[in-house]
Each structure stands twice: as C-alpha cells, then as structure tokens.
Image (cartoon, rainbow, N blue to C red):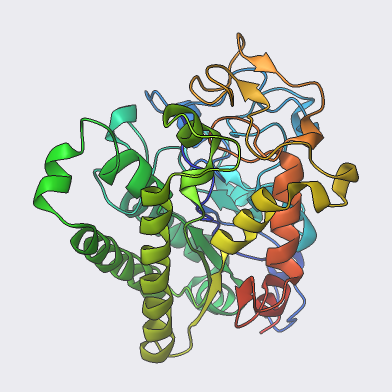
Length: 375
C-alpha cells in the first residue's frame, strides 16, 4: 500500500549555482529544489527505511528517463510533480533523497527531497506501514540541511539566499485521513473519541506549528497544496464497490472541510508572519476536473480512463493490490490518469504541474509558481 495521490507536499528551494560566491541579487536565479511531503513526491527516501510502503520495485519508474526506466522509489511510472516543476523552473538536477548516502556536501546545493511514502501531518499517520517520515521528522531533517547551508555559504549569505531564493511547496494531509482517521479497524477508537471537526482542528494546529518552524528557519515563500478528492482514487472505488462515476462521499467531504479551514489558516499566516507569502494550490479542483473531464484533455489525445489503475490488481479498477512485478500493466500508460491504486501517472502529473506553474487563481492563488519565484 502506498501513500495517496493528492497532497502536494513539494518544498522547492530554487537556486542558481552561480549564486555561490556572489551576492544573491538576480531574481531570475534558479537552482535547488527542497521537497517535503508524501508518496506523491517521494524520490526514494523510503528505499532506506524498513517500511511496507516502497516503490523501488518494477515496473515503477518504467518511463523515468533519468534512471533508464529502472525504479528509483518514485510512486509513479515516470516523473513526480516535484520533478516536473523543478525542470520547468530551471533546476539542473533532481533533488536527492535526504536519506541517500550520496546526499552530502555540494550535492545538496541542487536540492534535497525529504518526502516519504506514508507520511502525514500527524505523527500517528501511516503507522500501518511500520516506518515513514512524518512532517515533523522531515522538518527535523531540514534543520540539518539548514546548518549545512551555513557551512557551505556562510551564515549571512545562506540566510539571504534561503529567504529570497527559496520556494517551500508543501503538499500533505491526505494520508491523515486515508491512513489514519478513516483507516478500517485501526481508527475506530479514534473516530469514536474524536469528531471530524476535532480531528481537523488537531491537524491544522500541528500544521500551523510545522509551517512556523520552517519560517523560523528563514523560509519565506510557500506553496501549500490542499487535499484532493481522495474518495475518487481507484483504491477507494474498488474497496467500496462503486461504479465508474461514483466516489466515496465521506472521504471527499472530509477533504472539502479540511480545505476550507486550510485556506483560513494560510490567510492568517500571511497576515501574522512578516515577509512570508503563503500560496494555496487548489489540488482538489485540479484533480476533480481531471477525473471528471479526462476525455477532453488534449495531452496524448485524451485519457481513456480516470477510474482504473494502469498498474495494479484486484476488483473492477485494479485498485486493491499495489503496483509490483506481478501486477497487470496497461498497454498505454499515457491514457490512464492513475498509475496505481493511489497515485497519478506521469501524464496526469504533467497536467497538474503546468497548472501549478502557470495557472490562474482558480487553481493557485494569489500567484502561481513562476510568479512566486520572481517575487
């Protein structure tokens, strides 16, 4: 089982390598991408954990050109949203997973990826996978990187660089519902003792503290993704025995409720944290539009399904058993919105990333990622 599609926990530090050794005054400078989140953007951290949530097995990565089609720990057939955004913003290399032995020295100047399949805002989220990096731990790891930047650039230059040249794009929260509050059997006690309102209150209180921690380490430009229509993924449709056009109402209702409160939180942080810009990425509407109108997208002459996983097994939508060597694989991966029971295909990731980069305020507000970079 893997982490869910819809949390966009990207945290991008955009860096121009020519910056090192000169004052950061070029607003068009690009560079390293520092990514936080869950399996939507995990680039291999879970490879180094004893966990049940892993993607370093074939056919994952079959279309990832940088690895020659071999699995890297990405939970998709090709690039993640974080990979695509980094490319478009001029990043010279993909961000290295924090836990990789190669993520040392000057390698971090291109970026670091802290994301982890199964991770969430709450520390108890994803415990079914045994191990994962929750948001608190990811920020602990960023604190290590932050000190490394001081050593590489000098304290003053590093602080100026991070404040002016960095985009923190965070997408997290779906696992807190699907692999915590709504998890069958394991969460029954929690649901009896805590109402949805109370659980969402708890989530947002933790998230406020986490975002404030990053701010105190000089983060100033943030993009935060809300939770997508988690009731519409192949896994949910399959286990609930729904038809192609149906979604699980409770899961989507919780997402919408959380998203409304998240919008209010980001408005408060914009007002109360001097110099910070918090951008909201409306992932829910982006993905719901893709699922609902999948045939209308021009990419690859349109998708043929937004319900069935390309790689998976079990049920009408191949939505029970995660993608692996024994999975049924679709013929044309570019025709499926979903790669596996939980995660989007590279073709879908491209569409979502383009809306994050260049979309209007319906999808990302008050500015898009290119505009945020240039602030």
